[in-house]
Length: 233
Image (tube, rainbow, N blue to C red):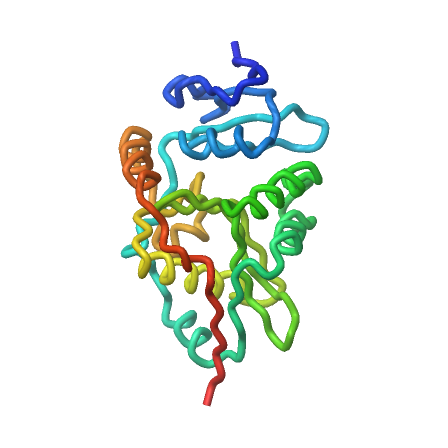
């Protein structure tokens, strides 16, 4: 029987997650800052749709990207070099979340419901959730958002309004985090898109051991002070 969470930000062990649906751990609770931080520190995240209770997940195996394993295709290298664009961090967090939650051709609905947006905006204001954005000619055209604890970044979602826009933000973010000691980026579940960028699956026990090690690390004070402008010659 699926555990129903009470008022305290306490979760069952990740190892007790269901096999079907894979990774479902618990239901209920809330999206308070304390509960979200407790969840991420244990490798747990919320994911649910409209008119559903809050569902909490800890899938196994886990899709992660070790920053040194980032893959940048030749075509993406050309885009990084030859496109006029800017990368900003944390200048349009709510806009990025709303864009990530906008309807897509291959999806019937979105899990980024309004209460999820509000909850992560509170987490952003508290300094734990961040966005990395691609801007072209003053327009937000792509980006991603996630949660940062110690040496961990937990990627949540990304969007593009033009070709490779989210990949530009992703590559810049991964390289920036790597330069500042980030040891692992959580990508949650397998997708071909993430695999093409160097992410791969690891067992739950390996994920949890690395997670524990990384969240114990301190972050540089200026980690989320990043801006880049590319001006092709």
